[in-house]
Image (cartoon, rainbow, N blue to C red; front, side, top):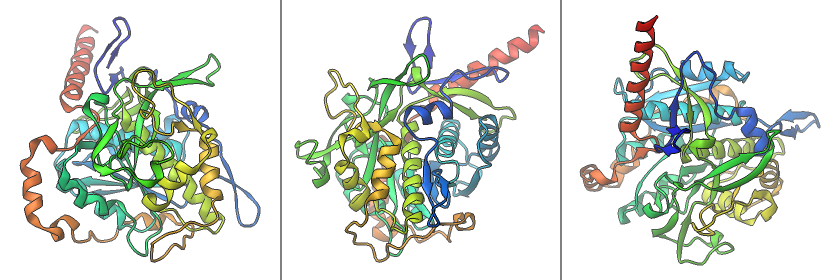
Length: 436
């Protein structure tokens, strides 16, 4: 939360507002305009103009615990900003287990994936818990679901050598259309170092910036957000695609960036589990950039499908191709003392990034099948959950991970702070009602 009177920041920046007030953060149209993400026009095979909105593609979002209010909250968000009705499918692996911080995270992820790719379907996979094992099982379900082209993961955990055995989960299954895996770089600043899975060579890591618009709402400048996670991986060797940017010997995180500073946050509508009334908050953190870049991937997949081109696998295609785009495809971010790698390639000039990735005629791939056709809404229904890869790889590793409390993934919305903010809001409303 930001106290504008004293400039005090509580990371990751959630500002509860009275539900009768309009939120003060950026709107979908402002962010789309700032980053060149709307309106984007593509061309159909018959030569007709088509809205570049991710239609026919599916964005999978990996969260933890069940958010019973997500469909209703997403509906409120969509109606408020004049977006199309969302095409949402929820895979609930958590049963009745809920968590306020993760519920707010799922609201942010789903609403902003929909805001920037309003034609795409959204598959929310709610992991049984926020342990590494359960989250990876959810990733495995998402990657095996037909139609998924992007998997968004707005969470992270400290690196450990054992995580190398998980990298294969962030690749496209044989016979599946190409999937790009996207993860937040974290809200711990440079001092925390790289986090996983953003540090995986197979994952597009997204860092954070402070965005400044001019008086007319146009893009003016960006600087590294002080709390954006950044660093060089201790477990992942420098990928070949990064050699044009750096030569540290390890993968540098992030690869790209997006708005994350809570002082320049965005509007999110969320209802805590167990509550009957939701409210608007101004939210930020690297959690925002993760679904935003997943939305960009969905629009690219739509354009390539319209051109009759295969979809892109993240590790072997999307990542190398992004690093191969001209620097003019990205907004250059002022890094100051943080370092030149803190923003990766920069933030997207959406139209340039999207058209650049669509225009690639062919790319090398190890996939069994690279044929992609436009997907329909019915294909968002998930297949039966496959046997968890972690269990198949060896239960001893799962037990070790479960005992490591320090390695438990968390959303980039701290639960304790979130609960305090909810309690403060509830108390304020009760006092106001009593004074009437």
